Length: 247
Image (cartoon, rainbow, N blue to C red; front, side):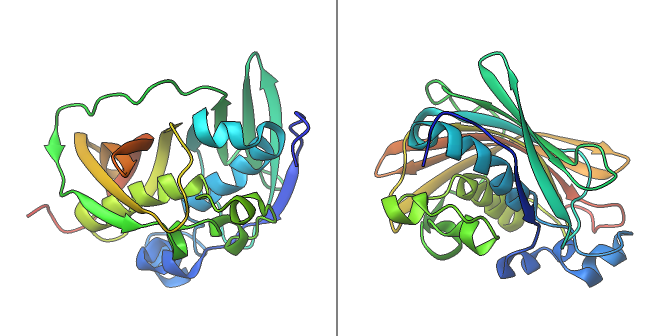
């Protein structure tokens, strides 16, 4: 599968069924927030951005690499995305482009993410256990239109699942109504077998208001059998203007 080359790739963006939990990923919810049609989940855009990296760098990136992904502008459902890589020293930058647009999202991939950082002080959230199957298993990309089968062949979790689990924490414990994933710094520390149980430890390290709504920054540590497999710094707009106040 891998030959070291990182090449452009295209896909029609779409939401998986579970994303309807966040109204912004439905036509009605997006239109209520002022958008023309459903926005594609940021974690799905991230899954697409990882495709050229995994083709080029292979399983080693899944076990040790990392990425800083930023969502610059909304990706509308059914948009044709081109994922275009550019070398930048030892890193690779992949941009998500649609016809007539600047980059809608950008990923900077690194080969080595380093050791797991400690969780920073802040608002501790409930610890959660999630089984790594179904929407959190090896077929996340296939269901979103990515044709790579390396994850199912090896029985390992798709890298987008780590951001999806951070989104699970945001949806369950932080967000109020529709919300928008804006950035993730993802560090891989080991591959994880599909079907295992992941333990999520999360902290809200910052909250602040912006014109787009209330924003939050979370640290999330994901462990399987006591071993850190991924850590994230996760950014989101957790309450759009007009959302109910925090209780």
